[in-house]
Image 1 (cartoon, rainbow, N blue to C red):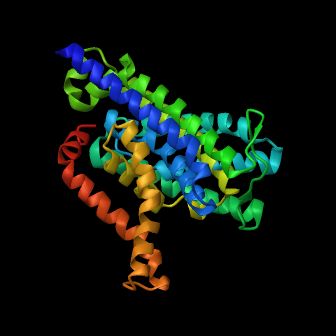
Image 2: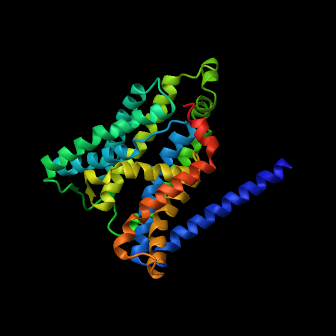
Image 3: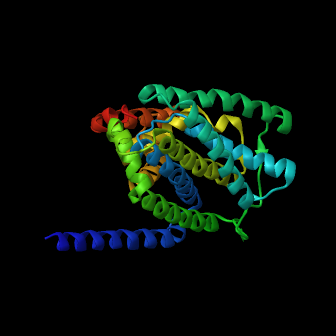
Length: 323
């Protein structure tokens, strides 16, 4: 019986992989430029959502500092390009080191707090990073933000939507495979034990400090690297991009996709990027809302989805409070 179940699960996974590969290959040739830009934005969201769902869902460490880490990556790329002439590939690795270092510091500073107190501790990073980014905007760019252009990733020029799409889909596949392996590894199992039964972790010889430090440092490094990549795609790194609203958007994606679910984070990212334009289009076509009032739809949807997702997953909320 278990053998047949395993075969069905394997067949289902192969079918999903085949469907994803087909969609990835065909999408640029079947949609217009606007829809392609939405798809690329969804891919960037997915890259940054996966480390957050790992941190919040698998490790049980609630974080409100995701936007700040994306900003650290974006501004690292901006400074490196503006001051030192460093390109995209090197910026990604340097941004990862910056994110890893700051994430480790946050882990050490919040070592003895859990639940909502941990979230507040990570949220404080937003109030540290945001003014620093604003000052850098004024001092280095005359408040225009860092302009980034002509990106090359490992020598490949990302000079079209097609190239960006294929590059991002390849990165999503690589990151999904790596983080999935990490979840099922000894490290991932320690995260789950610390999340579900923290009192038993000490008996099993699991170090709270090392485990939390590793989770924060690793996910922060990936997030900052994605921040550098995103800044190059949009061509600009500006403080107004990395706000609390962005952090809440990512928490909504995690809640919608299922905390700890890497595949869910990917699907939810594309759903979130497409939902607001789709709802706005329907409302405008039905004359239920004017174009001048359509801008608030995304905020309303984020609030509703976050609330409904958390209500539907009440067990996750209770579990996360144990750190």
